[in-house]
Structures are given as C-alpha cells and as structure tokens.
Length: 391
Image 1 (tube, helix red, strand yellow):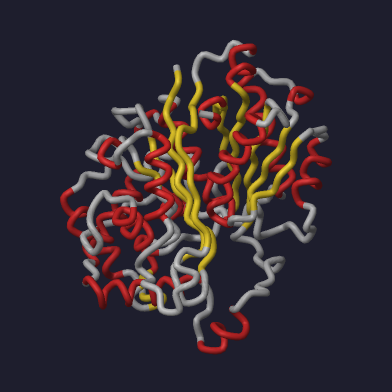
Image 2 (spheres, one colour; image 1 turned 135 degrees about the horizontal axis):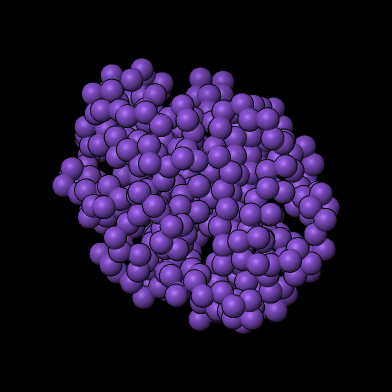
C-alpha cells in the first residue's frame, strides 16, 4: 500500500509552557534543527513541508510559505492542513501521499502555537457570532457542556469514570518532563469531582489549559530511509478522516461522531481489529471526548464508555495504555498544534523511547484528531491514524 511506503524517521517536541518567550518562528526553527540532526539529514535535502494550521501568531494566510522563507527551505511540495486538531495526523497522510506521488522525498511536518498568550488573531466568521454567542455559549467548553448534558440524558454520565481518566493522564504527565510544569502535580478522583464548574456538567479538570509549544515529525520514503542508513522508524499503516459527519441530518445524534466511520476505515486499512490495538492516543480537549471515542472505535458499545473505563487499566503499563505523555488535558494544549502532542507521544513509544512511561507492547498505536465544533452537532472533523514500528 502506498501509505506503507513512507516512514516517520524522527520526532521532536518543545517543552509545553504557559507564557512562553519564544515566537512561532523560533519554535519551528528549534523543531527543525532537532529533526534534521536526529536523522542525519541536511537542510538542503528537505524538499517538502507540511504544516498544521496555527490559531495564534499567524496574521498572514500565507503561513506555510512564511515559515519556509524564515527557515530558509526550498521545497518542491508545500501544504497547510486546515483541520484544527486533526491537522497533525492529517499532515502524516498528506505527506505520505505527496511522497508516493513523487512530488517530494523528505518532508518536515511542523506544528506550533502560542495559545496561552493570545487568541486575538482568530476571527470566528462561521455560525458563532449570529447563532451561538448571543445565547451565551461562549467557546468550546459551552459546546462540550451541551454534548455532556445530552450524553447524560441518553445514557447517564458517570463522573467517577471520567475522574479516573483525569487521574490516569495526570499520572502520565508527571512522568513527562516536557509536560507543562503547572500540571505535573498529582490529583485524585475527589479533586476532579470537587473542581469548579465551568459549563455544567463540565468541570475545570475536564478541560485543557491553553499553553505554548510545538511538535513535529520528519517523514521520508523508504528508499531515502535506507539511503540514510536509518535502522529504526515508524510506519503509517492506516488513516481515515470524516468531515461534517451527519451534516445532512437536521436533528443529528450529537453523541455519534465521525470517528465511527473514520475509525472503521483506518483499522480496516491497517488490517487490525480494535481489540488488537496496543496503545491508544485519542485527542483529548475534554474528558468526554475520550469516552465518546472509546465508544465510536468499538472498544465498547454505545453508552457503555463508563463501564469500559471502570474495568480497564489505562496506565502506561496497563491493559490499554492511553495518552501516555499526559494528553493535552494534563500536558497542556498548544492550540491547533495540540493534535501533535499525542501523535509525537505515540511515535516516541513506538521508537521505544518512552523511558519511565514506556509501554510494554509497541507493535502498534492508534492516534486520533478532532477538528472544530460544528453547529448543532458533534465535532466537525474526525481523524484516525494507525502506526507500527519497522525496525
């Protein structure tokens, strides 16, 4: 398969911080240096650049071109993936397609944002100003409050199960030196239950904290990897995305997400059943999103997420390791680039570089993305990426 003919040859990540002093160009430069040095690649050999969109610090629509210029890159293929939190995983598929088409051979995938400093450059020109903001639903917590309320009405919302997810991810963040320092403190289920209400029933510890940082990957053809003498890399073996799921339904089930469709396609392409997945790295802007994805991918049935969470050990050394770097909720969300936080962690684990949080079985990993919240339904884009090591 064409997707298998490309490899992830390296990964890089900046520390995740609040109120960082580095601008986006500096972060992209640091990531580029780490990626090229780690794989023994000269900058002149890079002929492709794929970037996730940035919500902050990018007043120009020509963001990808601007970064290429600032980094001094001359490339034959350039793309900017406008899928929000699906951007980083979507970038892997687009880079693989470009490599397979012969448009480029060695590609940088870069993501960075400064969400803790400013969101002033993000202008909502969609339905929000007319149909949502006047009624008091200001921002994503409000949308997830509605999703959570609907789920609670349909199936019942087990808050202790969500608290277990919060505690597990916080434990992983404490083992991750690049996670936001403010979040690297232990919590209990009681701490979760007693955290202040943000948008009922969403609590403070359900939510991500806006942070600054970046992450990236280096992809290349298998031929280039062999030429560079690389002995260890990660291969994408399944990918799918779904946008505007249930968009034609005037009264959709908001607890049904595009991951139901995208997940089945990605797993089929990878030749795996969901029961064969060895670690799971779901996009986690809110804890409810993790539970919904467990249901949509088929780890459990619809409405059975809480029971599955209660009986499953999600620690890095448990039954189904989940967001072993802490996830965005406990490592910090770096804006639209946050979709790369869990992606880089999955790659790190498959490289067997997890250190104190290394998973036992590195035969595969499932990574997801979520992009934007649509009007009157669930998130707009859902993406799923299956990875495996090739050593």
